[in-house]
Length: 149
Image (cartoon, rainbow, N blue to C red; front, side, top):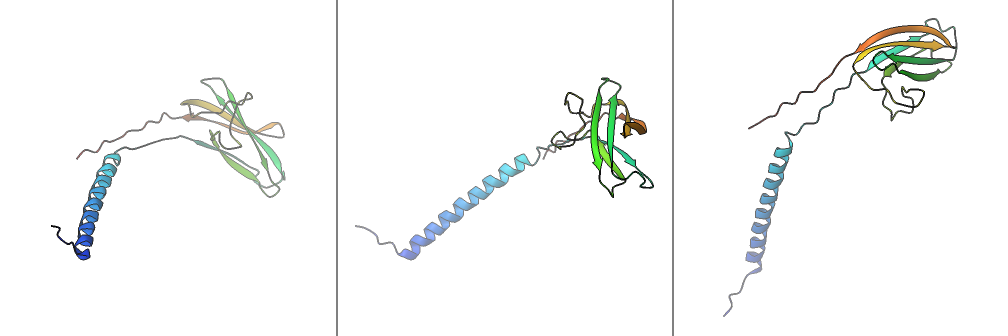
């Protein structure tokens, strides 16, 4: 002998099963994200801003060749920037990301790195040193704090 099941009771059972399954999935997702919330990625990058400016705008368009010399490695890194008609100056960052089409590199194409140490730099305009200076790259480090419950 079979017991008839009303459609309303069947849909209620499916609804309860669906809610239970949904609650289990939600608990699983929340527990998984809580475990990953304590995994940190960190980065610190030092960069130096170098610049040149034709203070009175007398040159018109010109090419600025930045040269950075590493005292530690003895390597020279170059970056050439063409300044447009109404542009009297420019600031650049050293080192630049090699993914950038204009980046500091050696004659052989080696990209500059942010290696701690002493550097000298100059900017040449029309082949003549226009400005120069020096800087020291600091050592940088990252600290990660682990959060426990």
